[in-house]
Length: 178
Image (cartoon, rainbow, N blue to C red; front, side, top):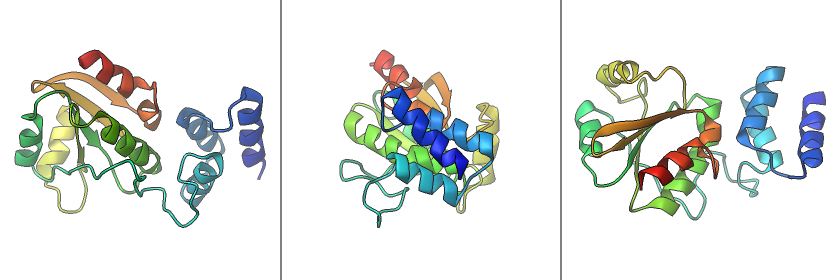
């Protein structure tokens, strides 16, 4: 598996043993590997927990579960919270969403209670078609997408798993909104 060796060499040459999610995504996108290869690669480079029995989508000890809006009523209720609110548009079948979720849970744990997070699965089991319509109206074209609200108004829209890394675009938006 040449792509695996190239990724390791890139990380070592860069001086960091844990590459950014952007590097992981670029390497996987360039070689066309996904699914189990993505999970195996993410674990190898440290994106996922070091415990081999722990799945990628399980939260770390420092994180908590992010509530889900399954209806438009739920969605609107989530926006009524004080402070910044982040709507996490996701899918359980998206490899990028699976990579972003543990990082987002850690972010939510660190920023709670001043920042509120909730997940939206526009085409997910149990969700209504109205959420799919809402995601289209909000311009959600790829997953994961993070829509940031302040006092019910959209202040930013960030796309991609790399945005939830420390120092990433979502972190920067939330720092500016405080």
